[in-house]
Length: 254
Length: 254
Image (cartoon, rainbow over all chains, first blue to last red):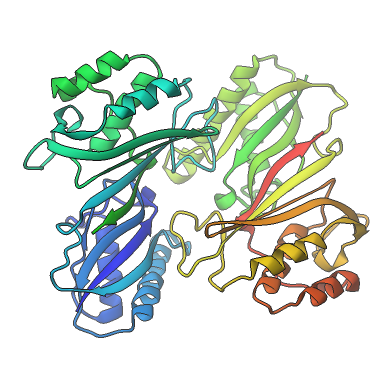
């Protein structure tokens, strides 16, 4: 039987989604919890392979399991074993990975390859002093930011084109050509919220976009420059990679 | 010179505001940072002595310092030493206590005794599965809650009267008679927000109120019972003490 799960996580204490030899990954933690629940070796395939420190509100994954268990048991049992893992690692009971939902899907469903759209959100905290409550949740930028320029720049981030300027050198995508279906930026009090969706993204693409948008906000980069950076297809012309802890995988649409 | 500071903190890793022998307190951490900054032994007096795990968005405190330093240096220097303390304790750089503001005040100003109003907020996360991102920030209640009843009960929480039913046995206040100036409850998606303000509160008063309001939400307690609990002045009749990690000291007014 194939299952689709929706997962929320706080990426702070993890080396990203992907399991690699002996690292501390979200994927590995969920696989271990599912193994404790089912006594099977289960491979979990995620929609978005988020980097170390990146969070998720609605990551999607699928897995195959022989044992038949009620959906409710899969959710609450996996969440229980995830809490136990955290307890044994940190001596504190905490649910920093949580299975929000689970459903049975067709064997043709693939969390990564069937995804039609991926939605990301990036949060910037723009105030004079750092926040204690949001320090692992938003990028703290104390410099004054020109929101109007950032909103205008965001409008350039649409459509089917070569986005090499925002592509990490480590990117393994077959092509730098992607379609950004929507990108929006707004301010709510001291919080700047950037939202973007596309079928798929290049590695570090959202964080590189945000780093460059902040340069527009501080007037280090003009709007003309921003357009020229996109046209250049040259990563070295764009801004820094914004920190991982401001980024959220929001949801996937199938 | 007397200074007034506004402080935000994540109470998760602290045994509350108040310094006691060798405990790990917010007050102690700030005093240590101020000592590193000024080379003076400084006593910090807070407005609300929050319990272990309780957070603050705008705690207020005052202290006297001989050394004259620019306000900007006091803020950024104290924040720097607070980050260093966290780094030496947890091997991670994090600002879980942050000085948001500082100003020079008259010698008659007293953070605790001059406060005219204290504002608290309590956050409940009411959804089927636990949240990974909010697990240290809200009380997770999975049972369905009847919001209308909770809102009605909240309206009983006003005025000058004996609030012994919500008073912890450890409370050191001279009298159980307090005036609640305002109390409100609302829902935003899965989040239930309870806000209350008064000149001062009894020990655990807000958390005991919230525990009892949740009993109203689950229909364990009727609205008539809720009124009878208040009238009884009997702590054993009211609900459980809601967990500390959902409570926030929002601000004080002078």
